[in-house]
Amino acid sequence: MKIGSPSNYTVQVYPDEWEYDSPRDRTLHENIFSVALNLHGLVKVVPAVPAEPPPLAAERPPREHEFTTADEVRWCELLHSPYSVTPDDARAGTIREVGVPDEPATVFYVTGEQFATFTGELWELAEIASGSNPRVRRNDVLDRSVFQFVEEHILSSGRFRPGDATSLGRSAR
Image (cartoon, rainbow, N blue to C red; front, side, top):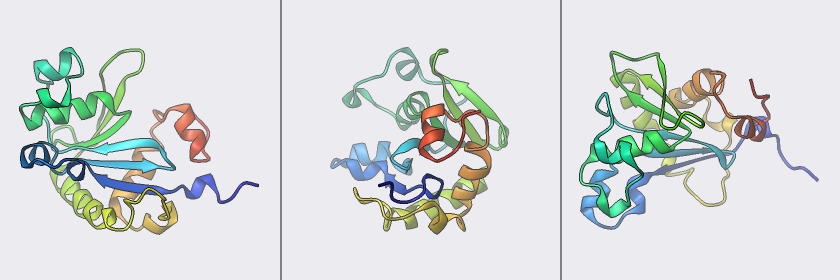
């Protein structure tokens, strides 16, 4: 028996810094969020990055102990996450593909103001939507601008991968 509706998918929100014990690592991952949609379709929300990745991030995925700057961590998140949201006032409203050509990562740019709103909402949601047994659903969070953005821009972009789209009860474009 199938329970629930994939279109009313579960939502999990994790501040990445919660994964680390050392103050240094927590600082490197500060204000980066992982947002899982129905346990698939991972969206990363990543603070501002330089226009191009630092050499360490671009050449190969570094081991975590090799990170020395927040820019390296942030660019690695963008390069290795299927979907990311990051602030850049000059690029706001645009989409960019980064990473390997056969399976690029898709980056959605927003304004700094939007990003500040998103991170505030995600901190609040992390308190109720970070457990391993997700109970928060799409319909519970659609009043939040970050999830309105996910719905209107990411899921409707035509760049959502087929398996991720299916898990959310949507057809791949």
